[in-house]
Amino acid sequence: KPWCRVVPRLPDLIRVGNEIARTTQSKRFSTSSIRGLQSAASDNVRNDDDRSPIILVHGFSGWGKDEQLGGLLNYWGGMRDLIMDIQKLTDNYPIYPVFVGPFSSNWDRAIEVFWQIKGGQVDYGALHSARHGHERFGRRFPGLYPAWGPDRPIHLIGHSMGGQTSRTLVQLL
Image (cartoon, rainbow, N blue to C red; front, side):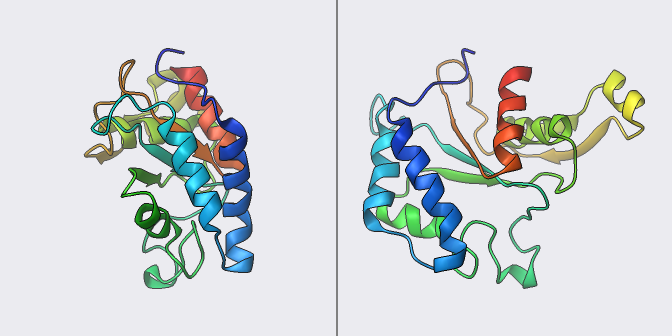
């Protein structure tokens, strides 16, 4: 797909993803893994002003910022704000978590991810909505990275069902 790009240093991203998954249990995140993430993501960067953002997609029954314990519990890091930790060590590399229906289908979640990135009102599609018995339109989002397109790719990182959601989004493009 023209809006997606295979990351040449995929093993680094996989290693970092595995360490992110362990973070909530061990409360640690190694500097070498964060640098691996920065290196893997920056391999596709054309210049300092064009850093393809990382979009984090949570898994089944995941939650968004301020939705658990009044914001004290982060999906990405537990009691720590892992995204902030990574950004401090990577010169504020653009990382955006998206928040989708925790128990929704991958189709619905993928559509929500798309509109959160591009901006606009979620449209699940007339046929899909009628077939599955829910409203056609959802929330409206300002857009995390409205410039996303063939010349402005993104990196999708999904945890658990978030990986399936990301793959569904790629298939729908």
